[in-house]
Image: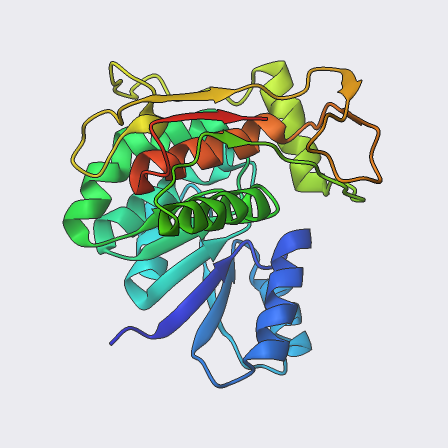
Length: 266
């Protein structure tokens, strides 16, 4: 048995603190959990706010030995420390090596592709489940797609089109802005030693083969009429900055779970 059922890495950041506050309120001391990051002082302060319940683990994102210790001690690591292409790759590697389950809140599709190529087979061999895009990017869209596909299959039908209408009021955190600037500037690029597949890694199935069929993202580029399927309160819809990321999350899930052979996502 490992020391902790759950460890939150990047616990002292904006999103990490929200996650820890929720865990503290919802579970308190009924589960064994820890907070982790690179600053002991900040973690000590956060632990005090959480009534001293979680354990404290220290690790910089570049310290593989310390990250491996976190993985060894944890059943699950949930990380909020982005940009993930800059700070997250070593943690994925360590969790895959140690058979530790992992989830993050990234919206960095190319980095997810890189992690699949590098560590998907390793994770499967150790029993580790690596699950990306588990925050606002892209749980609502991904779960909605899964439930819709499930209902259609119950009626012996198959999912062919997803048409989403999003009404969201939000503001990006500092980490999200840093990620966006890194992508735009090109400073957060995949490492040079990344191997490659002869197809999009998001289409990689459990057996290593490419998923059959086609998945097409046809998101709104500018502004268009809402269409016949829109909720009655909407006359138009416009570009959503995260639409492409959400489409990629559904693309990955479809490859693994088989929603349909030919799907258009809008």
